Image 1 (cartoon, rainbow, N blue to C red):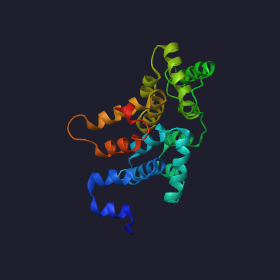
Image 2: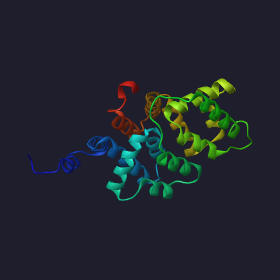
Image 3: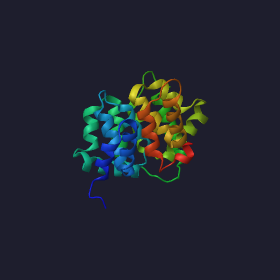
Image 4: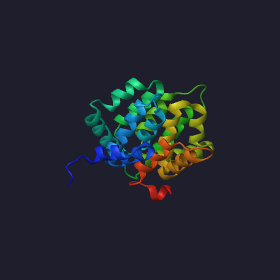
Length: 226
């Protein structure tokens, strides 16, 4: 109707945080996630927290679309950027999580859950030091329902929570990735409610986080998050 590009017009009419939120909102969900990840990588100090949160909280089918969008929009594979911009166990976890095909249904293998809980206990709390590779393998290969079952089996068998074990055995971005995967396997809405609360409590607000969570989750589970 007006022979002009709406995105360009919005950029010229808006500024600051409103512009950031509206421009992100104009994209479809997978392109939005790809953009959030790229922006996180480009920010002065690479904001690995945001990139890790988006990758580790999405379902396998969402991840496939994000990878496609990332490649077509930025001309580089998401895995290539991760290989360059992250390191150590954190890098291994993200690459494994992006490339492994996981089941998305509610089915659970109880016997396997007990076995995995035992493996994680031996690799973490029972051991001096931590066998990170076992944590990466189980957290990247198991479905959300299966991981929730492993967490419950872990609690039944050892009396402590798998979440606490991850906190005491790992640190930094690697810990953040594992905890995001674990918490989103149990209750993604609760996870994002906490992220929002954290961003707004006390003096000042982490606007980037508030915009990211509200814009990317509104079409998915905002009524549960609220």
